[in-house]
Every structure is written in structure tokens, then in C-alpha cells.
Image (cartoon, rainbow, N blue to C red; front, side, top):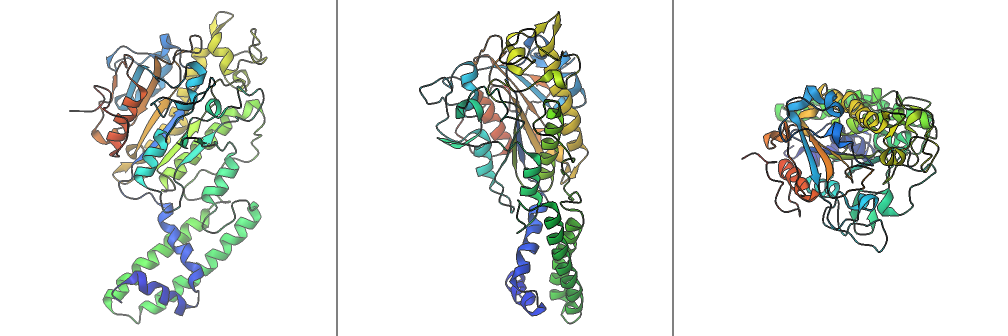
Amino acid sequence: MKDWKLARRDLLKHLGVGAACLPLLQTTKGWAAPVGQKNLVILQMSEGLRQTYWKPPGGPLATLTPTLISFEPIKSDLMVIPGLTNAGGGGGHGSYGCVYYGMGGTGGGQYKEPTGKTLDQVVANALGAPASGHLSLNLGIQMERAPRSTTSPGGTMCFWTGAGNPINPTGDPYAVYKDIFAGGDTNPNADPATIKRLLAQKKSILDYVGDTLDDFKSRLGNDDRAAIDAHHESVRQLEQQLATAPVDASKCGGAPMAGIDLAAYETYPKVMQAHLNLMLAALKCGVTNVATLQTGDSSGNNINFGAFVDGLPARSSNNYKSPYRNWHDLGHNPIQAGVDHKKIVDKWFMDQWMNWFFMPMKAAPAAGGTLYDNVLTLIGNHMEEGANHNSGAIPWMVVGKGWGKLNSGTCIPGGGAKVSSVMAGICNAIGVQHPYGAPLGGMIKG
């Protein structure tokens, strides 16, 4: 056998399992990140950041600000970039839809829309879809509950595959899990019992294939035995994956905890953690190269931070858009009863992302080190602070080693530079072509 890929079909046919088993065996590539795979993550916030507590002095990051203190363990990999502009993308809330396009927008209303692909899709298309077929993974946290900030696409979606084509974020972590981890030809809408039964059937087929391969190998020459061994190893890996996936928690991890009430205000943290776990699992196992998370829409009217953030009251004294301390309410009125609640919420997000996302990445082995070494994360926003709605001084952060190409461990004042200049630096670090022009000065080494 000179070409094992061609001979494999004949082999399987003679083993009696036929071509129906081929999709199972081919899915192996979709469950392990390729060596050297580079990944991009974007975490989108809303209503800006309290600059007094977030923005450090320009230059090397020495002592981190109160909002960023949890990033101390990865300070050398952190780039803080205040003062960016989203020129032409609409002002204030209206800049939400174009913030990751960075080259203007269109539309006659307040909420502008991009006329091309956003950063996530530029990178995803350049890197190519993994074997699983998932080009990018776009998630959102509880965005369908009233009161909605707007129904305009430019105010509710910030990731786009092109002009007029927004990506609607998937808010249900259970649906996402079934979709990307149900495996091969399993119906993503099947109930857990059905999925488990189908996986058991696949496992029985693989048991037969493995045993027969052993017998077949004994009758072959050395060269063909090596090919059989390689094929057998693929079967063995798939068996391990099926033994734990997905109802029994897949090899990749990411299975959402049972019983999350997606409609309850107080479960927002559980939904966010479930989505972060899914992102980690998808990246770790090569399901996608790009993952994005929308933590709210352009205003965040429907999030009640008082239901789950310590130090915030159950109700708002301002009653702005809702009776609760929602994101919009915090933006316009950060201080209530002498306490800066927006500062508390800003830090809450940074703390959770550090604990639920960056630290687990650092603990996940991968080619060349850990998963963390292979991921670049952009933490974005679409205005400076909710109180001023300023889309000409946007605060962004880039987290990750950048494969040695970024001047990390610094604060680089944007000085009114376009957000597209930071996207150019990100693309340069990943090594993909882009339409963004020159990178922000000081962002790239050398």
C-alpha cells in the first residue's frame, strides 16, 4: 500500500464497516488543536470603563490600577490601550456595531453598521476553518430579555461576516454545547439520552475496527504495519473522546452545569462562566480558531448587576431604563450613596475573566507550552465611559504573549488613533493579511 489515504476505504470496506465509519475516524482532527495553531478571542464589554480606576500611566506597567489588579500574574503579557477612536462608526451607543470594523459605517439611524467583515472574521477566514467546520464561535450573555436597548442590528450585534450580515450571538450554553461537541453526525438538537445512545453505538463500531485492525496488521509487511499503527492510534484517540463526550463531559471539557435558569438575573455569572468554558474547550480541541463573547448589547439595559455583584444594591435610586443597577444606569450614574458601583462592576469582570478564562488557559497543556501561549485576547469596548458616551477615547486591552511580536507589559496611549490600528497590530502578531493599515505605534516590537 503506497497511499494509505486511498487504501483506507478499501480496507474499511473489507473489514465490514463500510464508508459509514469514515466520518467518525475523520473527526479526530477536529478534536485536537493543530500544532502551532494561533487563536483569537474577543471579549466585548459595554458602557466603557471608569478611567480613574482603570487607566494606568503610559509606559511599562509597574503597579496595576484597582480595576486591573487581578491581572498581576500576567502583567508582563498585558497591553493597555486607552484613547482610541472609532471614527465614522457612529457616536456613543451607535458605535457598537462598527467597533471591530474600525473603518466607518453606514445607515441613516443612530446605530451604524459595518460595510465589511469585522476583525474576528478577517482572522478566521485567513486562518481557515478547522476540520470541524466551525469558522468562529460567537456567544452572548442573556441578550434577549426586556428591556432591550434597541432591536437595531447595529446596537445588538458587533460581529459581522460582511455588510448587512451580523452574527447573532448564541446565548444558550446548552445549545452551543450540543452543536459543537455532540460529535460527527449526531443531531445537535437530540436529547441527552439519544446522544448517549448514539455515542455508545459509535464506540461499539470502533471496538470492532480496533480488534480487526490488530488481526489485519499481523498479515502485513513492516511498512503497512506502521500505517495500521497510525490508523489504530486515531481509533484509540477517538475511543477516548467518546468515552467522556459529550453527555459525560467531553475530553475537551466545557459541559455546562445542570439547571442554569437562563431567564434569571442572578444566573448571569453562571451563563458567562459556561460560555467561557465552552470557548476554552473549543480552542483547546481545535474546534475553532476564533471565539467571541458579547457580555451585553450597546447599552446593557437588561442586566441587573445588583442580583450577583457584591456591594451593589438590589435596586437603583435612579431607575434609569429599569429599576435595577443595569449597565446603562451604571454608565450614566456610576456613584450611588457615595459608592462607585461602576468601578466595582468593572473590576468584577476583570476578576472573573482572570479566574475563569486566563488562569485555566495557563493550566491547559498545548503544543509549545500551554493554551495561553497560543491565544491572543482583545478585551474591547465601544465608548470611554457611559457618562460621556465618548467614542473618541475608547479603552481596549490586549492579553497574551503575541508569539513574541508585541510590546506587552505596557500602557500605550492611543492618542486618538483608530481602533483599526490596534486590529492591524493583532493581525500582524497572528500573521494574517488585513485591511487595517499600519499598526499602532509602539505596539509591535522592532
